[in-house]
Length: 366
Image 1 (cartoon, one colour):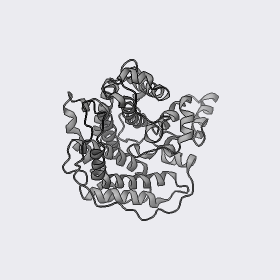
Image 2 (cartoon, rainbow, N blue to C red; image 1 turned 135 degrees about the vertical axis):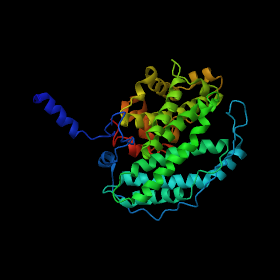
Image 3 (cartoon, one colour; image 1 turned 90 degrees about the horizontal axis):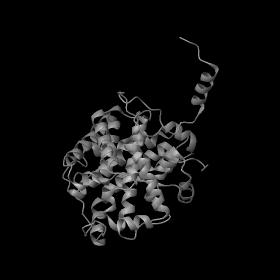
Image 4 (cartoon, rainbow, N blue to C red; image 1 turned 180 degrees about the vertical axis):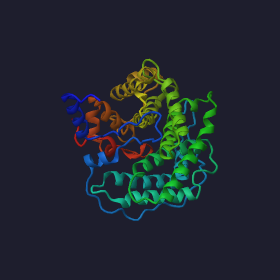
């Protein structure tokens, strides 16, 4: 074997010294599937002293997901406040459980020195709901959507704590089998390609949820199915960066472009961690969509013209309308996002695993 040159030695040394924000990629055909976040590297960058977690309140496991559809117009842009409030009440126990688990997994990520109790409690809660067959009962149409968002949140949260030391093997196995079972319950609804929801933002969320569950459960078939759904979403992106099915949402067109972009970005990070470059696919459809959304948030008038209605969205963006931008800024350092991020941090989106600032944000914007 030829000896390494001086330059090769230096480059290799630099690679080892660099703080890794993103996990090292594994080959596309590897048996090991990796999550999107290198927990130890993130802890080294952003970790802080945290108190021990208080006793958790997971609530009784919920089997059935019977949500309430609340859009009352053809474009699905006008929500009935009473129906929306009813949906929130119906899903409140599930949302509280997600918030509890995600908060614990984020605590594990952010604690320095690491506090194993955060990871242990998160897995304990997941195992309790798993043992009860939660989220695997009846689901109506709105309930199916809620199941996708819930699985995305819980699978990403589990991936943050999966490799924590001292977790009972039986609990881990129970959780992983459960996440895979929820993913299996999601798949049949996407066998009808002519449905709008099988091609719009919902297919993006289903792709992320099932792919993340596949990583968590070491199920390559679920991982590949999730990527395939994400690719359906990417194929919808026009040359101008717009999504026709989201454009049809009238005054909510920009909002739903953001809502479709967010899971695609996280799915791209899951793919990158496993050696697959979704950012490059379909003539860089994802960067095209991202650019169009950023420009729309800077000036929504072109979206209004394209959708035929003034856009209803908070500007400058905050909360879940902006949390996805932590991913984009971490990977591409798009300076258009810097001032928004600095003003709005910390940014959370439970459906994307909670604290995106802790997971992707730089300690200081450059």
